[in-house]
Image (cartoon, rainbow, N blue to C red):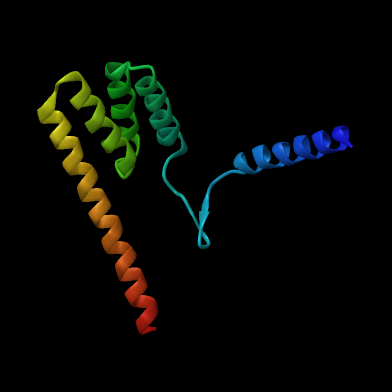
Length: 119
């Protein structure tokens, strides 16, 4: 009985891990078209932040936003890392860029909803 439970747990864990590696995320029939390379670099930057190496995180995330300027999360990460190293002007700049991209994303989302209400 115990071995059967363990086997079921292992199969469930494997299925969940495989689902996480399934490819691009789909949102309501749309795929995330942002650069995979930029997203990977952003995740590498987060790893540097986790190791408290904010200067390396800044360099990696700068490369990510050069590849994909619409990667808002990277601007937020840059803002936090710049703040951590004491570069407050750049922290403010990157936070404003993040806020602009988020405001644009919200505007597009609301226009999409209004379009579907009218049609």
